[in-house]
Image 1 (cartoon, protein in one colour):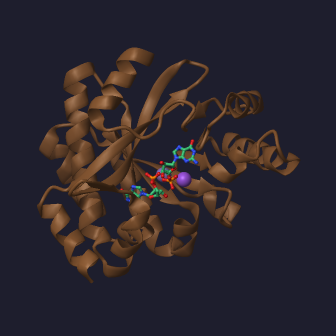
Image 2 (cartoon, helix red, strand yellow; image 1 turned 135 degrees about the horizontal axis):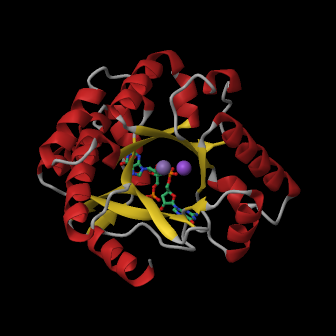
Length: 253
Ligand code: G
Ligand code: G
Ligand code: MN
Ligand code: NA
């Protein structure tokens, strides 16, 4: 209960921060976007999302928290646009209950208008499990988001049970190969079989594919050989505070 009221106040007290992890196109040797990951600066402690997102979901605080994350991402996109011509998108993780809200599109519209960035500056990640759990209530939002130019990425792909028939009808742009398959690449033959299948599926549906959790050169090489050239993971960079990400870009790309 104490944590709950502290989290409630965290938003107005400006204690939440977003860190950013680059998405890299290895073949083109360039950054193609970033994923925003929330942290809570609680006094001297930087609280990881695993320690407060579940509580936020239980209590409903996830709604104002996510709305803040969308606003903050739009603000950051504008700053980076000014600082170094950033024109990629910032991906924000949203649980499915946010997609169920009919005012999600209006809220995003308000965020991007406030800071004067295009809608495509914001990308949304929904987990495969979350999407499939409530498909009927989520689909209308997916279509409206697609119409205004907000791209959708399916997170943790391969861990849920997607109806492949449905997938072909959904306006999604990208699937993210779940970290668990990437971890076992080059170790178990099953993992490369799954990754190969996801890449083939994505290709036939006209979707981009990105691998998350890439930690070793070996994993990078196997992914590249299998036809996935966009990656994210500790091999390239951990999630960084905004200033550190700018520094990383200026030194790396
Ligand atoms: O950043 P970290 O590596 O600790 O993230 C742990 C988990 O928390 C990930 O599954 C990530 O999707 C989730 N997460 C991080 N930031 C957010 C956020 O802003 N909103 C939601 N809903 N989940 C987040
Ligand atoms: O669930 P989601 O995919 O949104 O999670 C992103 C989470 O993955 C964050 O907690 C982030 O810190 C973590 N992460 C990012 N890169 C790596 C990596 O290379 N290895 C591992 N183990 N975790 C990673
Ligand atoms: Mn994610
Ligand atoms: Na993920």
